[in-house]
Length: 204
Length: 161
Image (tube, rainbow over all chains, first blue to last red; front, top):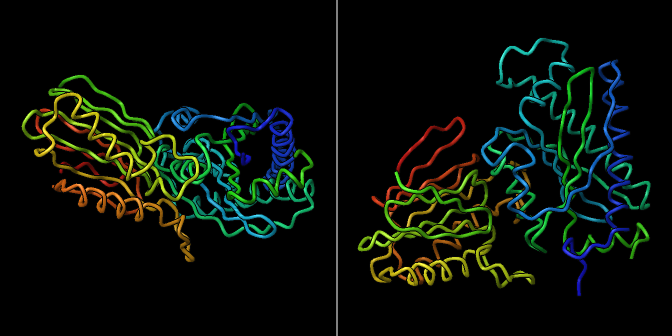
């Protein structure tokens, strides 16, 4: 039987949790340097969910969210995506650009700033993954979309859907003062890459 | 308005007039709406992938365009739908993210739409209307009383087909 998300054991899930933990730690440090303010984080949660339950995590299928998508190449291929509620995205940009939040809309500068945040986050996770596995990983430039959660999520869900009926995501929570920036991070290895990944992590 | 019946991702449902079928936040997936003009029995399936034949794990029939449509027809006929009076409307199949080197998987929306049309044609089910492609999400509602399909978006307006 081929290895998919539907039959991961608890040790394998723990490994992904650890990757999430280190990645989020690196990301929080990088963000904090960028804005010269303290950024805390909660311990990331790893969730393995059925398709139908995924959208509920980000406020339901019709909630406005920001998705930042990257392709990964190198020793393994796949995709990564970071998704956050639009108001969290807006708050992040106000921190980065030191300006007040006026309304809900995102202008070109803010979108560009978010792509940069996406770069930092993706880079942080991938470097933690790369140092744990010894694999060479290359990340593409980001592509960003603002739309309904269901529509944005359809992209990683379809990618996961080719091999199984479940998705894996890492919930992250960055904290600045009293504000929380909650996001979800999807790591989607292509079918053959999943096994390579787990092998190099030493859990199969 | 009748009862609102939700259809999730890789899921299907049927209803009778005056029921309303809805699926929220369609992205690259396609919402296939079948409607029997004689009995007003309607069905909706939210497919994610073009074909069950290319995938090893294909136990969920509602996940694929080919098996989803066939299964939905069966379910509607169980409710008493008249096979020869069934027509269709389709929506979705957007490309949510843009990359210059659009690989197969990035064009999954367009492939889903193509597979859906091919399947409907081979089953001789007329496609009355469609709202597909683009780069934005859609929420759709199918009204069993009239056969009207309502499409809502964020920033691209609302329309009826």
